[in-house]
Image (cartoon, rainbow, N blue to C red; front, side):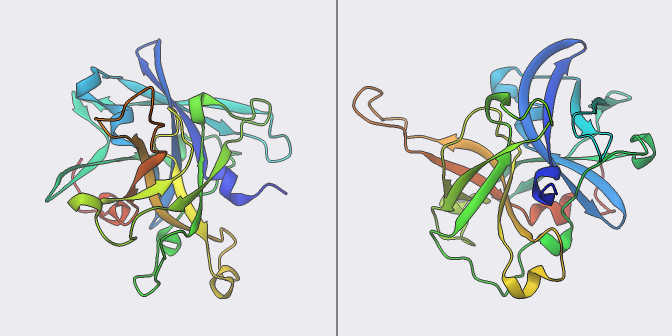
Length: 247
């Protein structure tokens, strides 16, 4: 048995035509029978670093009995000169989350994956405490099980008050050891036992990992890195996957 949480995440490779650019992480989200790929916005475009890929590729399992079998599924990022991903804004500016709708008909008929749904988002009445244990499911530095094409997980804890926008922005902090390539990974916590019986993907999707945080005045010799990261609140996915959202 493969844990369902491992089948939610995919490795995202970015390209400028055929030229490889970067490695990142992503995951599937399903709503009203529509399937989306979720990743960080800076994976598909990042103006400060002059990162402008025109396509991405994700790795998909094609045989549930043999996980070593996979294909690369290519997605063009522009159609008729317009970007195909959806991104959000709030009062504090841009949100580092992007979603791309995937045409199910284009997927291999034997494609094996799992997707989060709105049922995996946090119930507004449920309180998450600082210090709560989390997992970040992704591909740090592109590292993964290259035989079975599976991600790895890193342990994390919530490092700021969950529900408060840290410094007024739409993310909370996690304390975890992360690396480049983890951008776009799902940040999850276990469902309470009373809820997990109704959902075999028994994880609550709390956020989308974006980047490590650091202090600009840190002495690179004397001071260690903070080890803190920002994760954008996952409820943005309900806005970005709404049928009325224009691309």
